[in-house]
Structure formats: C-alpha cells, structure tokens
Image (cartoon, rainbow, N blue to C red; front, side):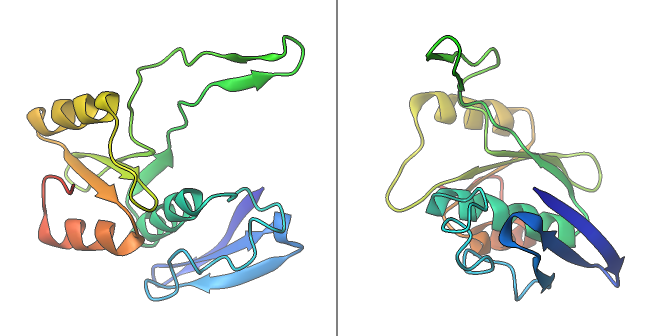
Length: 156
C-alpha cells in the first residue's frame, strides 16, 4: 500500500508502507525504475520491470500534477472458482490513463524489454490518436517526459 504525504513546491513525498517505512523525496531527477530499490523483493507490488516503469510514470505525472491513474484490465484470479475472471472492459486499454491540462486525454502504455504492442493495444492507440488524445509507449519514464515536453501524439 502506498500513501502520499506532504506536498510542497511541486514535489511529492511517498511513503511506501509495504517497504517497512521506506520513503524517498520525489523530484523529476529521482523518478525512474531505480527509484524503488528492492521493491519486488520486499513485496512492494512491482514484481516486473514493466511494473516499475508504470510506477515511475505515475510518480512523474504526480510531480507534474497531471491527473492520472493506473488502468488495470488484467483478469483477476478467483481463488474460490480456481479460475481467472475475465476483463469486463475493453481489451488493449493503456496501463495509465490521464487528463492533460486543457482536457486532452493521455494514455501511456508501459513496456519492458523488447515487448511490442498487441493488436488490441494498437487498435486502442489508433482510437486515442484519431480522437485527438496523446498516446505514449514508454519503455522508461524518460520516454513519457520527452513525449510530454515535445507534445508528440504517440511513441512507438
């Protein structure tokens, strides 16, 4: 579990309770996949590199005060039924959805290694771009930062 505490001058302090009180001051320079050392081993919810990219992107958006949230469309395992519950939403929705200043939709798909967009993710990307939104494919938080600074429409 994660709680936010004390905002000042655009900086966000995060207290990662799942890491035994581990806390770190967040600045644009401190955000990245290495910002949570040992998180996966400590049960911090980031068991994959991709999860660390998602967390870093969410941190950066919080620093910039851009409204954004994690959009988890993965099926959930039902222990009682011993099977996965299927996703009731749209397939291919980006990992992060947000609203940029001025109202433009932001969609960020986080990837690790050489992973590419699936057919459903490409369809979602196309729909967002056609509607005038900003779609970013981020392999690292710097991809998101560059896209926001450049005002790009997408990144593949």
